[in-house]
Image (tube, rainbow, N blue to C red; front, side, top):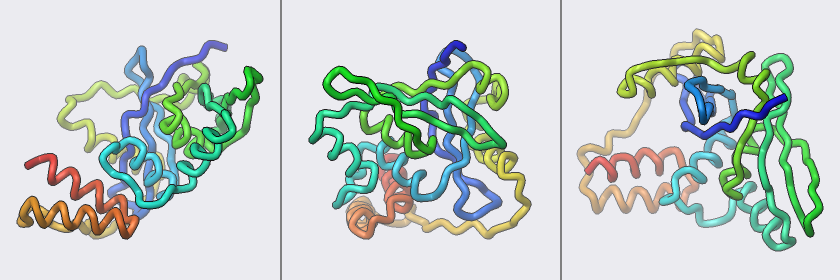
Length: 202
């Protein structure tokens, strides 16, 4: 079976179900997306690895794993999403130490959080992408909105929630930087990402 390389497009949040996230992976040499539902903790860990500007004051679980692996000369060479059963993706970490390769079973969300930290490529098999990949050719300006709808379709939930978002537009740059530091110290990385986005817009 042939392997297909994937890139991380980002994390999309459900508009209808609180605390539900999907990791959106893109086919490198194609237009299909592979959406994978993940938990809030894993979404936060992946978001931190994607957002280079946000540094947690203490190592998170995946950072600890990376530090541990570095100390003992273990390298994650690649991640392979190798199986899809009843909507659940199964992944393997391909690791190497002293030129000996080992394959370790992992949850896909954990495997991708580690792949980011080791800068390891992510692959899946063509038959998995054929089965679960979604082809969306859309206006790039509406892509984020469609990703959110995609998450809701995956979750297949009809729960209405009130959107809650702090308004950072009225804050000064100095206030935003203070809030960003406070959010990072409180380990509220979702809030920190929103504040960083507002700072970037300025």
